[in-house]
Length: 306
Image 1 (tube, rainbow, N blue to C red):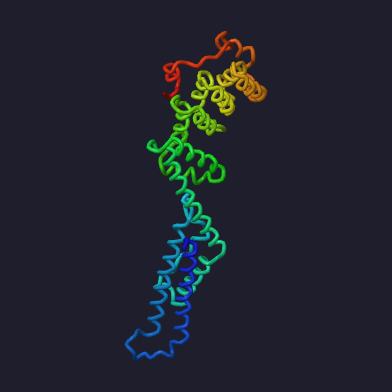
Image 2: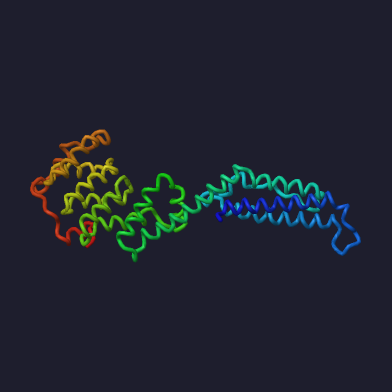
């Protein structure tokens, strides 16, 4: 039984208690005052107290369903203050309890509970997925898949993922840097490295800029250099990035060249500081000629993982 169903069932049971109390009021005259049980008025008072306790229980359950991203439960879940039993009569107490029942049984309230319960489940899912993404004991495949799931869900469940990250006291970079390390790791299969790098596409975090520049300048894999060009477009206002893409337009690999050349047109509308002449002045014969990858030692010095 899910939480919303439980809330509904509790609400029905509360109504039953309330109806029983009203029945006792109506039929009180039929009871004998000489019997050992309490007088009908005292019994009704006891039932009212029980009704209040059950309502407290239901409202507590409702509160646990409120979204953890909110600072307080939805407005519909905040019941009116129950009057002090000594300050009002029995009729007044029953009236307030009846209003609380109506509030909790309201269709909009039930809908809010359902949505809040779903939000809590999404936060829990995000926490578990983030834990996998940063788990050094997990396989690279599992970690990459976890990161992919988070990225694919970010637009629709941004608040829940943000809440899960903050509750785990993590920075954004704590989640994506393991994926970057996979892309840099020369010991991994090139296709897997490319897959990891592609997952960092459409991310403009400043911590990615220099590693991407290094991949574009020094990696032996044309496919990784080509993907680096794509990723660097999300840092296109940076002059070093603009110059690097212009340089990549003269890469020895035709696919890398074509990818960089297509993006040069976009750069013209993004920044005005860089010109073909200023960037070309930084090119050397070695840059324009046959491209060779760096040694492992050189690549490690520039951010590669070996």
